[in-house]
Image (tube, rainbow over all chains, first blue to last red):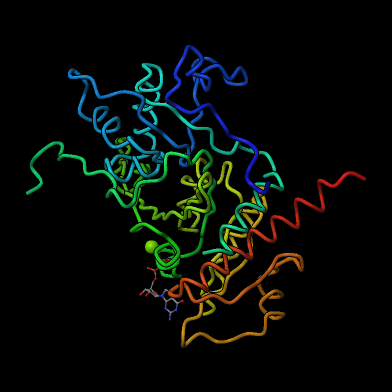
Length: 123
Length: 207
Ligand SMILES: Nc1nc2c(ncn2[C@@H]2O[C@H](COP(=O)(O)OP(=O)(O)O)[C@@H](O)[C@H]2O)c(=O)[nH]1
Ligand SMILES: [Mg+2]
């Protein structure tokens, strides 16, 4: 009841042609398809391919469970900007999935803030 | 030791893995001058060992050798610490610490975009450091609260005096904080979120 309402994508195992839903965001110009935030959660959808570049393979390897872009940056010791470039390719090829983070520039909704408050109170 | 181009990447420890059920991630930013306690605060609230992400800042440096028009570039690496708090099966909060000095503002673009809000951490011995930060947050429309970090030799001003000398609006909460204490740091974050909640419910209510 007090859980956040937004960002409930299908379970990632389901797959399907709409898995690149972030790419289909028509508010963004095509040259800049995915807007990845430092807290966008990334989850692998497949194993790393054998011919894959080491950095990309590492991302696929460590994202068996959700990891934020910032965490990937920290584990790979690469700047966030570099990680975003790698992730953009991996999203396009379908090796990873991005879970929606809170859309930028919107006032957070009340339910979300309630959920954050309750979570912090229960620490 | 450091001769290999890429060392094997070590991911999170198994116990640091987020549950697969997490769908939503939010962030808050702790901002303040050097040595004000950002890293300490992030570390005390985080459920994982705090992590560091680095960005490289390239600056053209104007120097005496520039007669030939050769721009000298200097590269500085700026580290940002962050920690994580899993709030429910579906929701996770990331807490970023970022330096407040003007020369680091280039870091702010991706960071404050979409952030719930900020905690401005202040060392009462060096109040003047925080002027710029608060002005800049106001400009960007980032809601913030002020946390005064408790250093033993710091002068203890009455909150009213602090508000006045730092020109903090009445509505903005000002709290004392000991960044070394988890509960105190947690309370700082809670103050921010309660404030955001109040802002949201008073501005978005239908008339
Ligand atoms: N007494 C006291 N010392 C603190 C507190 N927070 C941080 N420190 C100390 O101040 C120093 C600088 O803190 P740090 O977190 O590294 O500051 P940063 O540069 O903002 O990340 C460290 O030695 C901390 O142990 C506090 O609340 N009280
Ligand atoms: Mg620090």
